[in-house]
Image 1 (cartoon, one colour):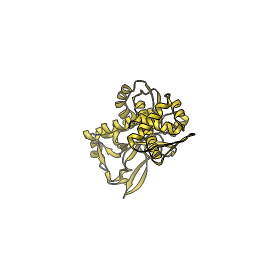
Image 2 (cartoon, helix red, strand yellow):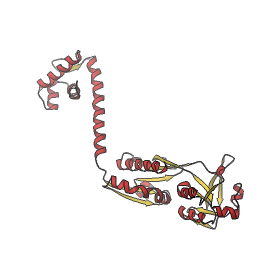
Image 3 (spheres, helix red, strand yellow):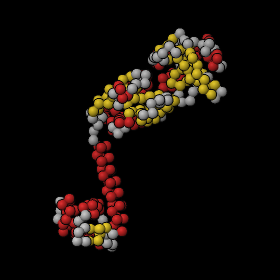
Image 4 (cartoon, helix red, strand yellow):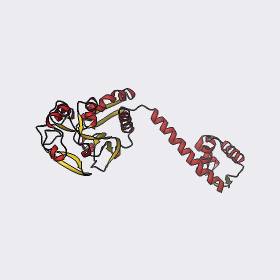
Length: 295
């Protein structure tokens, strides 16, 4: 038994007669009749009851018909999938991403993506604010933390830990705060857009948000990190920004028991873009590259 015999059998039942099936397949009526008879002989069962007006499937014929239609559908899906994967991606992909995250992570991996997909035009806007994907015409956005818009499709890329840290010089001069109340008495370096900056921390296992004030506030995490390295104060930043400074000893972690739980980093896109292969391929690529860089 081969796939073409199954396709011929299904077509014959769907058409209702050898003549109609022959017209559909572009072969002779005699050829269709012989192939069905050969299939019955191979299986050792009668598959069709022949009448003067219409062919009718036997019970075993219906069983084979159901299985054959499933096999043919799976085969068609597999062929389409392979063809789609083999086809080159084309078009323009508009992506919004947080500024520092993109600078530190995307900039390292984008050349490889562009090399693998030379017919994709990438437009990447760096903005730490949550954009309106539909209104602003973005295909995808990278977001960190809680997602408020439930109409968006979200794919988890990685987790991000935000920590408290300061330079050895700062801690030597000013001491290490023992608790959150003491923390608020220190020089704190604020990363955010608005004048009201909250540090979301934990105390006794429960969330505690601190309304922070400081001499320096900036909307760029790398600037805040560098200020902390220079001993200007205590910073509250994600590890993807301060990781190398921690490894080198330029910054030291403090108050570990008060750090918040890790926040998720997502690739989000509107529901109508869920099936767009460029969005799927790009988000999968970013996820794989982040995992590789973190390994």
